[in-house]
Image 1 (tube, rainbow, N blue to C red):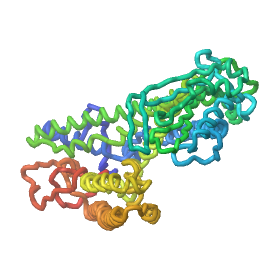
Image 2: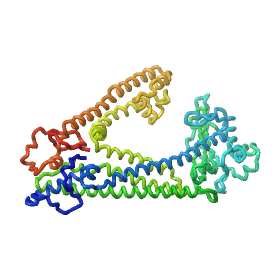
Image 3: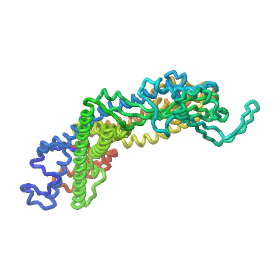
Image 4: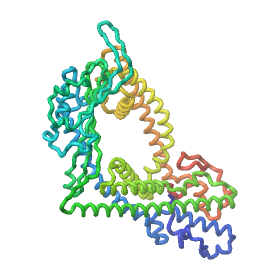
Amino acid sequence: MFEFPITDFVSVPDPEDDEIIDLGPSMEQSEVEREAIKLRQDLKFYFMSPCDKYRARRQIPWKLALQVLKIVMVTTQLILFGLSNQLVVSFKEENTMAFKHLFIKGYTGVDEDDYSRTVYTQKDLYDSIFYVIDQYRQIGNLSLGTVGYENDEKRKGLKICKQHYHRGSIHPSNDTFYIDPTVETECLHIEQDKLAKNLPRDSIMNSSFFNLEFYRLIKVEISFRLKGIDLQTIRVRELPDCYVFHNKITFNNQAHSGKVKIFFDSDATIQDCKDWHISGSIQKNTHYILVFDGFVILTCLTSLILCSRSIVLAVRLQRRFVRFFLQKYNRRVCSADRWEFINGWYIMVIISDLMTIIGSVMKMEIKAKNLTSYDVCSLLLGTSTLLVWVGVIRYLGYFQKYNVLILTMQASLPKVLRFCCCAGMIYLGYTFCGWIVLGPYHEKFEDLNTVAECLFSLVNGDDMFATFAQIQQKSTLVWLFSRLYLFSFISLFIYMILSLFIALITDSYETIKNYQQNGFPKTDLHEFLHSGDVTFETQNLRKRRVKTFPLICCCIRTREDDSILIN
């Protein structure tokens, strides 16, 4: 943005107004000169801050007032949705924990790594499988929660599937084996009626399906569905949700190492409650929230229209300036001066408004129990709120002391991106090297994703000693390599690369501070705004020229002092 003294505007024209203002003596000037004066005044008015526009022409800053109102409304909406979503998340997590205690035999309440429990004997594996069947049969008498069986006849009961190799024989003592790697899957469906008869375990266990050949067995999966109702939402005056829990217990024997890992996975989906009645004012409270969401949509729609209109007017003014510049001075306007007309904040506000409108519509549908897409709605509302609050920086940027952050980020971004590309190559090299060499000896290097996270933590100085200490000393060569690997990575990235990264930003900050004290370099647009009848061919613009950093401007500028503040 640019700052101009308000005394320059006795009567400020509107960029949309095509009427020629009476300029007194300027009427005797040529048509081109009058067009230059008119264009200059339109440009000065366009680049003014909302407060300056109000002081110059008493134009109320509607967009500023609307953005402030939108911040309050969108933040309030997000908080209300977050509190509601928090109840959904807690209900799912607590039910998952309850199911683990109910269906996993010997579960202690703490997962072992990424799985819930392990078994090491054939007896323990059989006991764990039939323990699930027994607990499912008695779920109505055991569970403290509001859960019950699925009513769908096709989905009632338990489904047990086992995967194993087609055939084979293994003789470890003779170091001989034969295996057909073709994987076969067999499934057994135990109906609900059969489980309700309380048949003894032996009658089920005698089935040939449970004659497991462990040297061929890959995994056993037990899946079942349960239903539940979340009544805690009544406390916050919301309608309860009805859930379907898709539970799956996996006994994983893929490694054939004598250790079978037991995984428990529960996926909860929300569905419409078929027959319900609640006495009280819950319905009324829901209607109030829906009306508030409607006002949010209306506010964002108005903001979207105003910002889109501003961009359209800016493009028209840009074309007008480019056409005039080419006709009078026979010169093309550089790309940086063209981009001065395109306000990136408006584009960000438009994106935020679109996401808020879509998210608000989804929130209303969720509140009315017509949708259950909590994750998508959270993503839209959360991102839009982030963009709304970031947009506040635009208005702080009209003050020179608050504008340093924006200009520093803008100036340092290209250099930082180029620097990150170079540093990223080194980072990827360390990632692949650590994964292949240290993976078998350190849990933080077992897969690429974990290695990348571990190295990023080391760059930030987190968990250094634990990373050094947890390396297994089974191989002296690998242990020595791990020391060289970790010491070189930490020294290179913390002492050199990270310091250079900070230096790039510091250099941009010092450049901005210097420009604010001595004046920003001028472009053709700035010269046109701050000159009278400028003839660029006759002015000595080629003296003391300097190219400034990218993204501030790619044009050639002079080092003359000015009162322009570039935003």
